Length: 106
Image (cartoon, rainbow, N blue to C red; front, top):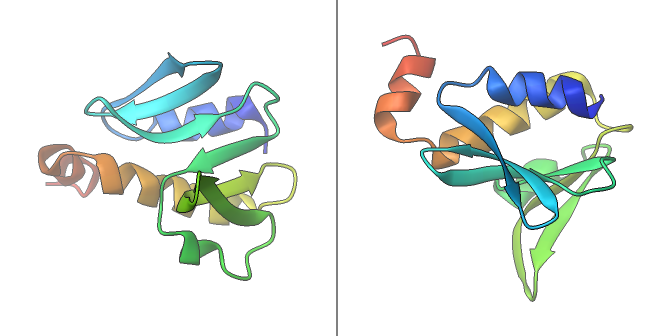
């Protein structure tokens, strides 16, 4: 997957916005970050339960200091379907309920 493909998936989620976050790009919903892309553009950081990446190709735990805060996903390795699902889960974790209802169709 490429960054433009990832961007298209993220921006298709209701209420998503892209904004800078220090040197990174970030995807947000309701002002809350659910994914970041480092300047290298070869991976995405998703703020989801890190156990979702157990045994999944291209996924490793994402640490912030001593705390594991999500998953690091290598774009060249991860399967599109897996990355799409993880991106939606990260979005859902941060999205306000009214926005989630829009995504769920009511």
